[in-house]
Image (cartoon, rainbow, N blue to C red; front, side, top):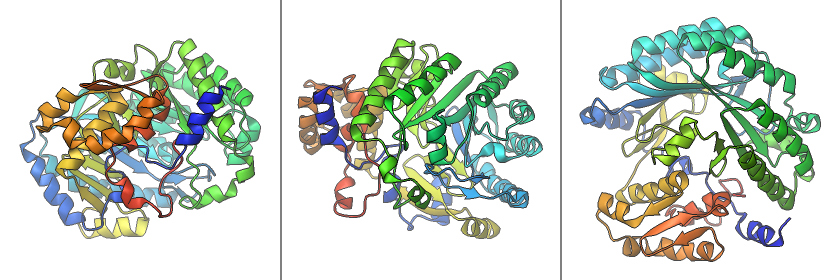
Length: 459
């Protein structure tokens, strides 16, 4: 362990957003509701037909509670709840699809959760078919889904392929049995390999595996063993997330003992080892928490500066308007954000009234647009040219972002950024601290000072 790196971790391990959006979701306001959502969508009618759209469907149901999970989920084994939810999801599709006027094609779709494969194969086919009847899909659309290998059958994957899915994301977290017991998620290496084998056999063109470091009872040695097994499985993409321990927000995390969590020193040792081993295995470090094979579309998108970041993490469809469907899902189109109600009764009540289920939202200001562009390009391209900002927004960067650039100076001194008179470039070291870099440009963070932390630790 390098003492210098540990000093940097101690210095910069603060609470901060993951910047899957800017402004971050806690800034959203209840003043933006269903009526504002409909009005905002109406403003998109003039967008060219060639500009695609992305869809996100949230399936919140799981049959067991994973203690580490930070998602909006409902734990149930009652299948009637799922059938009812799908009826309402179709009603929401019926509200949104006509407003797209059949002009713009879906270029990307993702089903997340919860556990989307909690649906039966027949339900997957039914919902997938309904979506294709309601929207126009581009023939080269990226269509991905989160799957849980536990209780998954070959027929689930077959149904997903039948309705056009071509990418799967599999949560592994850690193969170590002690860690799995501590987070209440038992999933064998054999089962994971079997499901990935099925996906490849059925023609899914890309597999993403999700790992988490910072979980209870993890050590650098135990995580190295998991990592070596994943490298042998050879997925196209690997996400290695920092465990967001926020028990004051996610109550089930109180079931995890703080004493079992690895120390900051161990966490940074795990991260450093992970980066080294994945780079040695031929993966490219996309930034922050994502790795991809050089020929994967994610790595290609970064090289061509078409990489994007949204509520599902990094994606390849920069600029596509995102529309979320289902409880708690988030939309982002034009200068607008909108999030659906976070409980089933509220969601159902809104849909029954024939309105969108928008619970909170946000209309971005000019300043938000500038800062979003800077944060997004730094996190995706790992560099920003001042000329690009000035051309797009007609501002003088040193003057307009002077306070942010001043806040960035300690990070430049510590080697996270190489700064010139005309650009900022993130270093290899800086990729580990992307959230801290982005925070320098966040105009909304000071408003949360002194309050209960809204975010997980950055390192």
